[in-house]
Amino acid sequence: MRCPFCTQPDDKVIDSRTAREGEVIRRRRECLECKRRFTTYERIEENLPMVVKKDNRRQAFDRKKVMAGLQKACEKRPISREALDTAVDRIEKRLQDVGESEIPARKVGDAVMQELHALDQVAYVRFASVYREFKDIDQFMETIQSLARDKGKR
Image (cartoon, rainbow, N blue to C red; front, side, top):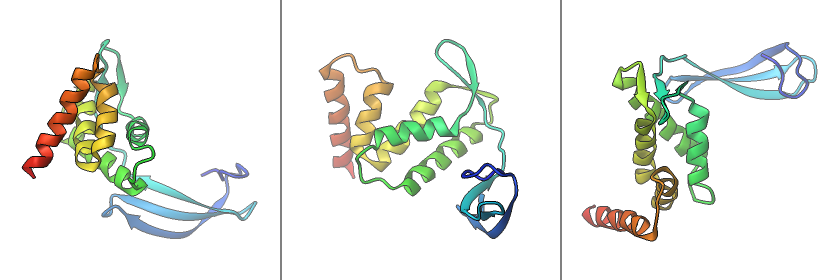
């Protein structure tokens, strides 16, 4: 593991503990060269399906890309990083549970929409406006009205 500060390859582990219900190991490390401390996370490399894009290109599922989309939708909203990490974990698990070697990108987007719907309505509408490519105000209003109907059912 290279130090993120001085790029030296030598460090020592100061503390190790499990995180996220044992699915991740959090390690506190100290660089032997510059003595600065940093944290790393280890997770099991899971067999996630390939994502098939609209133009039929295939690419590996990218957790960072999903997180970036969630962060953008939740920008300036009262959503914690931990809540976003948990949402990405659930999305990953849902896609793994499908058991397919390839899934359409639409399924990833739908999973993100589902998480945002439960997390924050404003973030949900932000993401939906880009993901569903709203063409006019009517589509936007329809989504907002749908949210209001869902809220009334609770």
